[in-house]
Image (cartoon, helix red, strand yellow):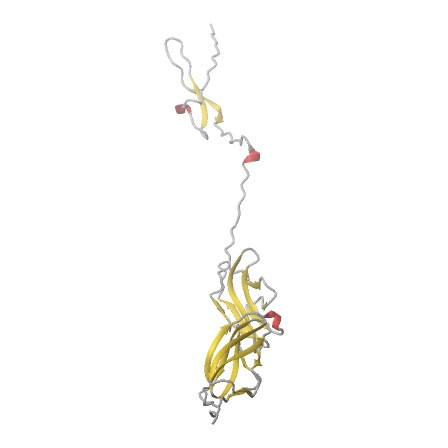
Length: 271
């Protein structure tokens, strides 16, 4: 008789020893009739254990952004200028030595319209034309590479170059007094300046009209001011004048010295 039977077999690939991804599976079989085994029969068909690609659960959140950072140029290592300068003089200063690690082109500029700067060389220029420009300015020199900036500040002082004007008020020239052996005399001077006054001083000789020297000084401010002194003068001849300084130490004497005479004479006793 002839006996036939089909048997369905399952290979569990979740078990590690049954195979790995990339393995090729080939089936072989033999039969048993309770007495003997037959020879092996090898199937001509094969199967491969393939890999399943991973998936991204939330693809919209798995986007990466990258930023390539820029290195800012260094601040100028040299910033030289002649300071202060006066009216009609020209400022020449140079900001240099800035280095850019990324080899970007460096541009120089300033935060103020008082001065101008060459954007490529850092050369700073300014020509003072009017008294109204007198003062101190904080100038910020900026170095940029189109992405980032660095800066360095310097103080630029424009000095008043015009001397004040000094005038003698009293006593009048050739003042004369013979009322006593010692007389209190008032000396008054005034001064004007285009920017700001600092002090005014009285100079006078001794009674022998020699040793013209400093006597006293008073602090003053503003564009117009005056001062006076009272001196007790004995008999003799004197020469005097006033000297004024402004805030930037420009100075001026009055145009001409003045003279005065103290000429007291003791009257003869009556007979």
